[in-house]
Length: 393
Image (cartoon, rainbow, N blue to C red; front, side, top):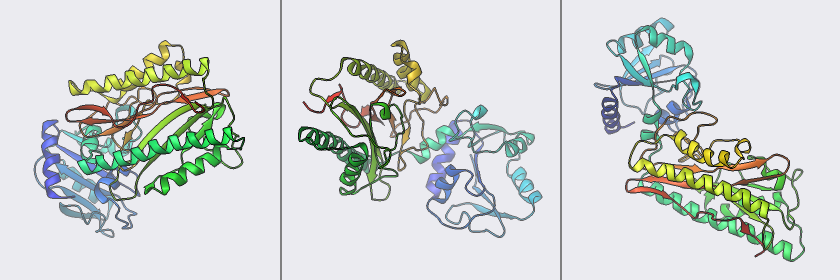
């Protein structure tokens, strides 16, 4: 971590009325600390380390004596401990006079991605008279903000993913019109080959699902568990990837189509509700240009539409997730369902809006867009599906 970044963090800590930011990890117990402080460093760590950034003054590294290189690339004064009493005394001294510090913590454990500070250490800090604040907005500001180059990498990946979806629809159309079989797994593999041949990489192959399989939001087709795609089936394709270059940013989209020329009245009706919910969520996100908007508010705006239409029980996951160099990143999620995400939407961050309706054992729909908070406004970074695609049209 460079000294100029420390200065930026300290300025933000002062703006938030905080006396510092405490990181600690034991055998990778805090992935945020590991990523932020250690990056891709492969140094063996089997002992707990601490890193404290005060609002004023030099950062402090508290390291075990047998692992003095745990934070070798991070600036700050180094202090070493062996006995447990030592780290407690060192930390207590470092926090003397401090009243409120940030840590990877969320009140009542409501956001699991942030809830990394263990209860016992939290008790130790509170016994020192420390008030613990959530580092949620700090994490976003200093770990998932995109540079111009990063944003451009996202756009390039997104264009390929959009091409891959329509390539997939075309594969299905050709197979049906020529009376050839194509199943979910085969189509998934073709899509995976399509993006891989275009310099994209991904942490998992795309979701390709029809009808009742699409009612499982995380369905994974296999050779053994794969249905043949037939005329009048509803087809869902969810695909995510990024360029292979370092610091490239993921794109993540979901489109739905029906293997027909005309469509289905019931399918069109349900999918239109999904689209209305998606658009309501985006409209709420746009308000962040005028005021602070939290992730939970976007979810609530989306969910209200779907619940009003009588399908609330079939929308079984959060509305969206933070996107960065990992498809599910450490910024605000659009969530008032699985969690209540109080983190704010901040400039130069990226996230998905992807509501779905899943009627178990029957049919499922999802529409996913990627949204970027630019300094001059909020934008959808790619194409926006406006209706259920007629694959045979």
